[in-house]
Length: 267
Image 1 (spheres, one colour):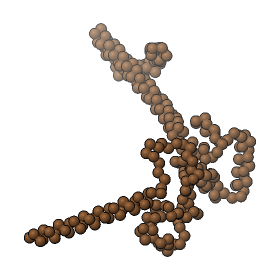
Image 2: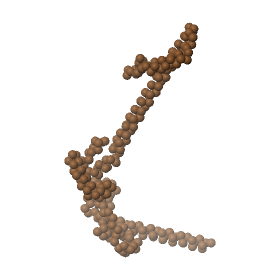
Image 3: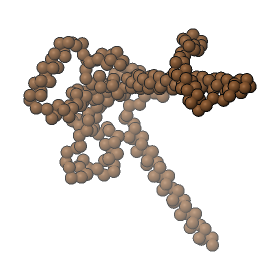
Image 4: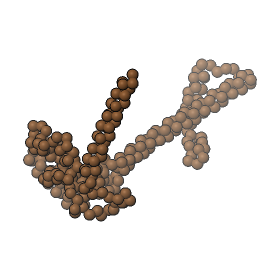
């Protein structure tokens, strides 16, 4: 038991010693890698106008120097300066200048792109013939003589010289917001007009029903007075004549609405 315990302790000591040696070698390699590199102090704050004349910038034309950390790491991993695949030439990508600042290169690429420099051709322009092209040129020349200032948006009252700027304005939030507001106002105007007409019709129906009710009440009152006075009831011919007279009286009944206070006029 004692010999086994002694042998186990010896093995753990050797393993710890090997691990310690590996860590020391790793630390030495890191010190060697970072020893010659340029470092800024911890209290350093970057400024706007940085002097980059002496700074080494990587590109496809200049080769990596032996002081490059990544190059030395590849050499340690066994890279011998040859390609890893079938292609001998490197894959070229868009060369960007880091001196322009964050986002400046993207902005320049957007404004200098081919699809943004020239206007996208319409289907009518692609399918047009030479005769149509001549007619279109003559019409556009006359239009330019009439409107030399450029493209005008009547809805927003804005004018542009470039077609790309005009297309961007048509797809902007401001233009679409004004367009939706105009459509909503037109729809609201038509709906309010229809509502007013419906209200007028309903009021007219109520007034007609009111007058018919008054006429029926008068007729019933006249019949009661005749019955109380002892006058014999009218025959069928007299009733029909009275009904025709009543209808004529209703036809000649005229009423209207004044503009002040909604008062009613009856003739």
